[in-house]
Structures are given as C-alpha cells and as structure tokens.
Length: 304
Image (cartoon, rainbow, N blue to C red; front, side, top):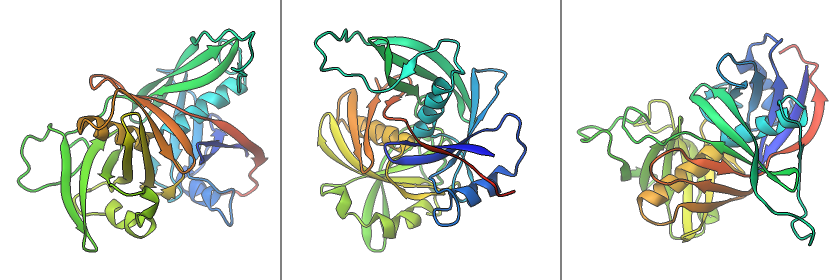
C-alpha cells in the first residue's frame, strides 16, 4: 500500500489514496502512526471519491478514533491532489520569490474545490501569485457554541446556545478558565498570562481531555495573546496527545479570543511547528491558511 508522508506546521500525517482499498482503517492508523514500530504521524488521512464534492477525506487519530475536523490535514489533502494533477486545472504549488522586482504579486484564486468530511463539505481555495500557487486556504465551517454542539454536560447551565466562556475547572489544584467551542470537533481554550511553554501541558492535557463534563472528550489549547494580531499557543489533541500544530485548534483559539475581544478579524496563531493564519468576521465561516508540505513517499508492507 503506497503512502505519502505530509506535514502542515509540524502536524504530520500519513496520506493514502483509498478509493480502491478495503482495510480496518482504525487498526491501520494505530499501526502506521506508531513512531517506533510504524511510519509515525499525528493521523492517517484517506483521500476518497465523493458524490457531493470533488473529493472526500477521512482522518483517523493514532488511537484509532476518527476525527470530525482537521484543518492541517485538509490542506495536506488539497496539496496532494494538486501535486498529483487530480484537479481540473493544472498548476504548480510551491514557494514564490516575492522579492523579485519583476514579480507580479496579484493574489488571485487559481481554483476552488470542495472536500467532503464527516463534519460537512469544506471549501478549499488555491491562491496564485505570478502563475504559481503560493497559499492554500481552507474553510473550517462556522463555529458552534451550544452545549449540545460541543458537547459538554454542565448541570443547571442556562442559555445553551450562548458561548461558554471562562468556565471554571480545577485540575490538580490549578484553576483553569475554559472557553468552549465546536469546530465540528470539541475544543476547550485556556488563556494564560505567561509563556505557553511554561504550562505543564504534557502532565495536564490528558486530564482535561477526559474531564467528565466532555462526553466525547475534548481538544485542549493553552494560549497567550501577544497583541491584537498574534497569539502563541500549544495544543493537546484528543486521541493524539501534544502536537506541534492543530488547524481546528488554531481556529478555536482565534474564535475564543475574538469573543473576549482580545484580537481583530485576522490573527496569526504561533504554534511550536509554525504559524497558522486564521480569519473570522464573527458571522460566517472561519478560514485557515498555512503550510502543507510533502515529507516523503513510501510503501507499507504490513497487512494491518
């Protein structure tokens, strides 16, 4: 079985064209994502045919669970189908030398495609500069704030559609004020005043993920606002653990920060693996941009 290893801001994936393959994908993800006995990765991405979009995508975590949303994975799938010439329009994806004096820097949409995910159809836009695609932007859908949407179970909680901001929890005698948002998958964001690298994420991440109030577990983000256009963050992904980046997590951080009036419409989320750009007008869909690169290709010989 052929695969392609890809990464977006250090969030790494094993990508497989699975239209003609039949596997137990949960078990395959567990085996392939193992960093000692497998390929190693934060998830297994499947590129599939779709009856309602240009392509379909599924994403399985290293523990075998299936993720509802994955922004970095979505960009990697888009980069893959572009590189493979699977789009109706052929173009080159890569870095553009914007310092060239002869470079025309018009930022225009080269193509727009639809990708079907289990949380809905997502729009992917390829932005072209001087004939070469320089940026891939994905629609992450509209954030949801209802207790049932996240989901979260809070006794005596009123106004279930109102955003749940600064909800207090205590983990190992540490008071955490969590802002909750669904990006198709559940997120809990904690804003701190110190460097996020000082937060004991590796120790507390799993405990927040498995809090009893989250029946489907939760992704946990620790963030610090630097100014109205920059936030630094670290992410504990549900079913994965601590990762270098998370697209839906970056979006959740941006949404929570806007609801607190910490930032403006556009913000750079600075993660250990790189920078993701998030844009939201507080009304419609959230848009995510960032890197998507091929690391290597290979062949998986195991039957699992």
